[in-house]
Length: 102
Image (tube, rainbow, N blue to C red; front, side, top):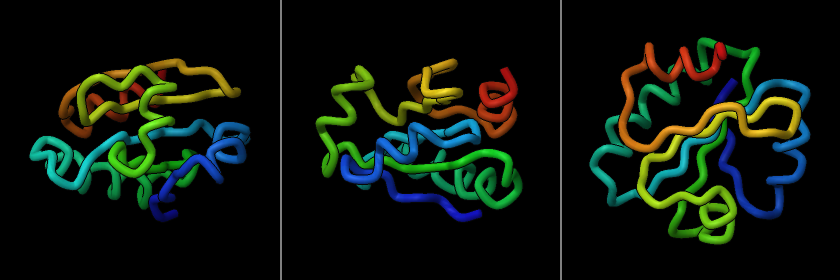
């Protein structure tokens, strides 16, 4: 699967997904975000059991605020509509996958 651009109009359907949801809060100007982005893309392609989405904090400040995003990238895992894991800052792929497997 490819990465889904998430915004406030499609967020409710994403949150209600039967699959665990992995969200990457990012901005185009953010260096660490650009380092994490290819890893997020790889996970989306390699792990179809997860719904993977990206949220641009500059375009979706309400969603960023709702998740308490203070620094980016912020990575969030949602299972059954509830946040099960959240981490700020760039992470290696192995750490991201570990978040998803919790």
